[in-house]
Image (tube, rainbow, N blue to C red; front, side):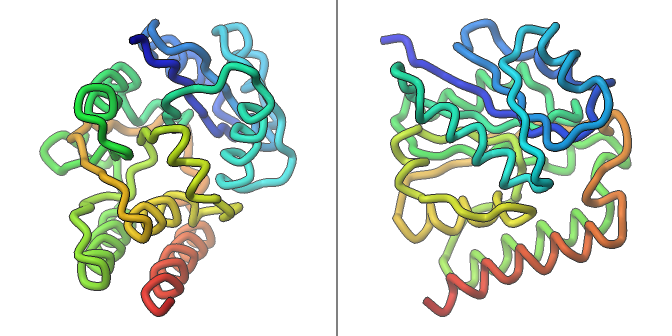
Length: 230
């Protein structure tokens, strides 16, 4: 049976990359939804011209954008089987979506993360603070929950029914780690797929700034400790 797959792409000022991302998404995907997170450039126009459904979310925050996409999907009559989350900066390889959804389709896994392993990363594609932050977060998840995660990678897929069960709430940088922690708490099945990772087009809105890096780190650690002592 064919799976209904929708892709959610939060995007803030990604006019130079968004069309590339949409173009490389496999044709079997039913709908690509780009959420313009208060963009002030041609992100929306370029995404629409590339064939995506374009939504607007004026409240800045990665989680706000993802929640907007989920709200849109909730109002559709034909609900998807799988939701894929993907960044709009072209650092991931969208064509690897086939590999990301494969464990869900073929092995009935609930949740899959694209793990940006070192040997597949382009030099400079992740900052030292990103690498350390990922290591620390996944180390703590292993320590507290015996988790096997190696990354907080944004390229990920989850069964739509399971995503709804998570009752996601983070509005900003804690979205990815919140999802992983709730997957662990609910004992959903999960796995990782090694993915390639390249230098993004444009400047990172998180790791490219000191403020963004600190804020993201605080959010991630606060979610981990919140769930560790529940």
